[in-house]
Every structure is written in C-alpha cells, then in structure tokens.
Amino acid sequence: MADLIYGSSGVWFMIGALLVFFMQCGFAMVETGFTRAKNAGNIIMKNLMDFCIGTVVFSLLGFGLMMSENYVAGFIGIPSLTMFTDWTNFDWNTFVFQLVFCATAATIVSGSMAERTKFSAYCVYSAVISLVVYPIESGWVWNSQGWLAQLGCVDFAGSIVIHMVGGISALVGAIILGPRIGKYGKNGKVNAIPGHSITLGALGVFILWFAWYGFNGAAAEDGARLGQILLTTTIAPAVATVTCMIFTWIKNGKPDVSMCLNASLAGLVAVTAGCADVDAIGSAIIGIVSGILVVVAVEFVDIKLKIDDPVGAFAVHGVNGMWGGLAVGLFATGNGQDGITGLFYGGGFAQLGKQALGILCVASWTVVCMIIVFTVIKKTIGLRVTKEEEMKGLDICEHGLVSAYADFMPIGVGTASLDETFDVEDNVPVTKAVPVQLAGKYDMATDGTKITKIDILLKQSKLEALKEEMDKLGITGMTVSQVLGCGAQKGKAEYYRGVAIESNLLPKMKVEIVVCKVPVKAVVDAAVKALYTGHIGDGKIFIYDVEDVVKVRTGETGYDAMQDIE
Image 1 (cartoon, rainbow, N blue to C red):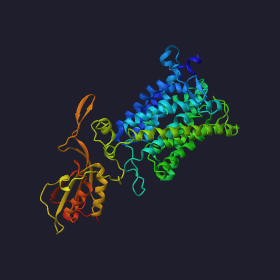
Image 2: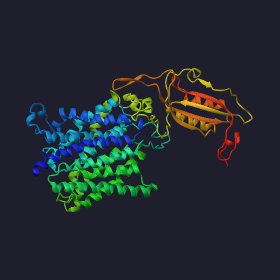
Image 3: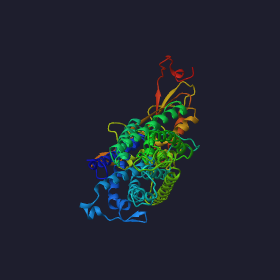
Image 4: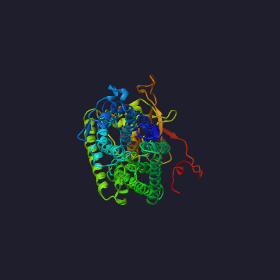
C-alpha cells in the first residue's frame, strides 16, 4: 500500500506535483498585487506563459539535459527524446514532477523585472531558463549521476537549484534592465512605488504557502517523513513572519504588512533545502534568520545598491535560497530522510563545506548564463519598453488591454515622484503645439480681488514637471485627478477576443488651480514651459472667471477665503 502512495510512482508524488503547479497562481497574485494596476494583465500573461513556454522547451530538450541516464562527466545529460520515441516506457511521473519545478524557477524572475520589460524579451529569457540554465544546474544536484549529488551536496526540494537560481537571475535582470521611471531621483532619493493591492499579494502568499506543502512534501518516502516535512515547512515561515513583524515594528514604529508577506515566503524558501533533515528547533532558527534577513536584503538592494526589485525577488528567493542551502550543513540532525548530519549536531564542517561549494558553483553558473542571455536580448530585440510605454502601462501597450479591472479607471503613474523628464526630438513652434483655450475673458488684475480658475489637462509623465514650475511661482495649492478623455485623435483600435475595440478614451491628468494674486499669464507661461514637447497630446489649458469663493468653516469669501493662514 505504501508504494501506491509514496515514492516516485506514488499517488502523493503526483498530488504534490499538482500543488506545485498551483504555485503559478500564487506567484501571479503576489507579483500583481505588489505592482501597479496598469501592468496587472501583463504580469498575469507572463506567469501563464512561464509554464506554457517552459512545457514546450523542457519537453524538447530541458528534461533530457537534466535527468538523462546518459550523463556526461557528471555535468550534463544527453537528451534521448524518449518521450517521443518510446512513450510506453517513458517515466511520466518524474517528467511531470520536474516540469512543474522548472516552471517555478522561471517565474521568480518575473517580479523583479516587472513593469518595464518587453513581453517578447520576457518570453525569450523564460524559454532559455527552462531550456538550458535550470536543467543543467539542477541535474548536478538532482540527477544521481550529477557531480554535486555524487559529492554529497543536499538540496531536498530546491532552495539552491530553484529559488537561489531564480533569485540570482532576477537580480542580474534587474541590474541590466535598470529601475522603473521615478524609482530613484536625480538627487539619489529612493521613491516608494506601492503595489496596487496588498489583498492580492496576501492571497498569493497564502496560495504559495498551501502549495508549498506539495513542493516540499511530494518526495517524502513514507507517512512519518511526510509529517516531519510538513511540520518543518510550517514552523519556519511562521517564525520568520513573527520575527519580521517584531523587527519592523521596532525598526519603523509599526509592523510592515508587505514585508511580513515577504517574510512568510522567505521562511518557506529557506527551509526547503533541509525540510526532510532538520528538526523543530532547526527550522525555527532558520525562520528567525529568514525573518530578519529578508528585511535587511530588501532594503540593502533597494536603498544602498539602488536596484529596483518591485517584489523583493532576490531578497526572498536569492538570499534566503543561499541561507537555506547553508542551513542544511548547520542543522541536519542525522536522522532525516537524507541521513546527513550538520555542524551543530555533531557532523563537523564536512556537510557545510559541500553545501557552500554547491551554492558557489550553481550561483556562478547562473550569473554567467544570465548575463549572457540578458545582454544578447538587450543588443538584439531589446529588453526594455520605451519610456512612453512604461508610463502608459504595459497592459495597453503590450497587450491592447485598457484595464485588467473591468469598469474601473486605469491607475496612472502611482504615488512615486517622477524626477526625470525626457526630451522629444523634432520640436515645433510652441504656439502651434499647445493651444490655450479661454473659457471666459480675463486680464491680469492688479487689485488682488479678481479670482481665476485654471484647468490644465496634461500627460501623466509631465505632472512632476508642472508641479515644479508651479512651486517656483509660489503656487502650492492644487487639485490633481486622473481622467479619461480624447481629442480629434481617438487612438487606434485594439482587439479583445477578435472583436475590435475603439480606444477613444486615453488616461490623462487634470490639474485645477485657483489664483488671485499670481498673474494668470505667468501660470500659463509656466505650464506651457513644463508641458511642451511639440507633439500631439501635449495638453490644453482652460481659464475661467470665478465669481466668488466661500470657506465652509468660517464663512469667509473672496480673497480671504483663499488664505489658509489662521
């Protein structure tokens, strides 16, 4: 009966594989929630294609490179294409199991490069990871003929070969790609760009945690081992999350929600390598270190190195993948499924040294491969979308999707300060490019009693430039809203399920300013200076006479109602 349930041909082995597949949903939710709504559809599409493209290339070549019985020098397998030539005798169970793990490694990279990567470039490097990068290094550890497996390096469920590899690939990609517009100011200031839905992010974490019981537990040799694995897989993330809550509470004055979600995943990543070989105390210590390590790593990468990783992929998977691999050499009890003993349980430094060597070699392989992959993509088809496409959002520019949320207005640039502006070539005379339309007569009043309202419609990318010009005039009060509208040019048609949709409403910003002392002409001139590029869509300025202003609290009217000083 046990053979029917456990082992590489058991039912639980396949159920575990299905749970690992469900992790794609969890990753999609985490990445979507931690980024802006204007890119939600793009992220969903990338997570979908990770698995679909990965299935194709892993079937054709990747599985053979990884698990072939004809393994050359402990380094690489020779593909035999048995799936296509000898279907009856093919090891279907092992293939399905390894396939879902391969897809997990590829999808980790998506989050760190979110919101500015070309979809075509993403498809290419996702395919390369599943085709070559992951299969070769994972074969070193998980193919019994692999050189690290022969040496005795242990990575039970993939802290090193999956999570560390995905995290390092994510870091390399983020460095070569560069940060999102507005993430870092010219003066070195780091701007927060919050994700649009912590709710979705939390849902993704819970899905991942649930599916992780299959991720770690699928290879359990019997029921007792399964219970041990599920327990350590629960203790580490729970302790990591509590530790992170306390740490951020002390550090920042309040517990950080998004960081605690990251900590749950960090604890899961770190315990993955040793889940079958550590005990409750070991898994708790692993969790404590993970809960602090993820915060330190996220802030170090973001603030010190100024590498833009929207979801903390490197901190969660890369750093904690390394920690998890080393933790095996520290906390393995000698009574686990792999029968190894770590330093703190009397095993000496031998196992720790093997783990460190495995981490170093796999990390080096990944860095070299991904630098080559991303550099080639950047020099050929291009890695990054244009600045205009990034500002509009990848949903509309890459997929023709106005919004991933039907009946809701697309979100604009988020709350980040956009310190950088960019020039457009072939400027035309300003009088032709930015028309000023008068909604009523106005002149520059000198008595200070005339009140004028100025409405400015502009591109989202020009908001910060406009605010800077208004600040120079001493105008600090304004109302800013996101609007949809169109002029004579209604945009090209997009398609949904083969049906053309006229994209006649485009996202813009509307700024409303009321002045009485500041000359209206000065405001108009400053706005034109900030908004002008010479191309269609620079915006319009509307000027209105205001009859009166009433301050609700005091009942003051006119000029006095405009003053905020008590």
